[in-house]
Length: 230
Image 1: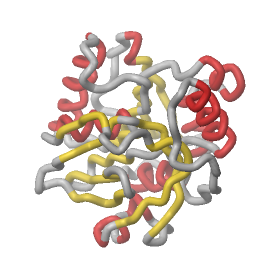
Image 2: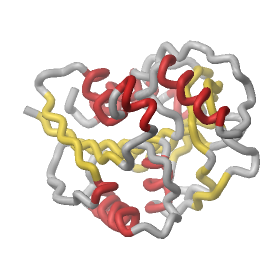
Image 3: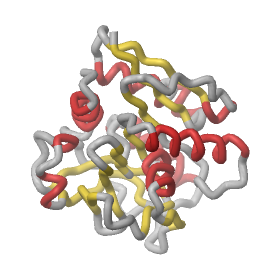
Image 4: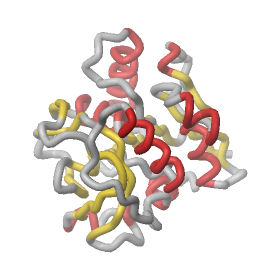
């Protein structure tokens, strides 16, 4: 049996959890493969008793910034650097994407263009179109977003796979490390509820219309295929 560790970087919004459960639980349901043993580690509760020899790792999103002065975030960054040094397969989602970028030498800052919240078109680069992470994707696809920080100044040894009008959307490093700024684990229903909750708190959106994202989930399966797990 293959082992995949999901590093959960926050509990999420209470309203979302009450209706749809925790986002870290959505990933195994999407993969739907009984031959994979998923272990969820709540690193935001300082649970760093983590197997360094798992077959693959997934870093989830978070309400936090990687530059927040919080003990577990420092520990997460150090552990992630260890994963990179040990050439493990790692997928970072949103906050996880930013953690990986930081560990590889990029900058992460609040986006001057504002939030990406809702459905957005991403544009795959030539390298993105030829990368197995985006197998089955066309050059432009709709994905779901919820973030205000963005990745800047990725080093030259990192391949840029996708971007949007506002931010970098995906990168890879040595075909082991993959980051996606968007949320491949989100459903349309979750995204709609998340939008409504954030709009009610005064966050502006580029569009209140929410488009379908038919291929986004496949990023999770594609990553595990690359890792030889799925």
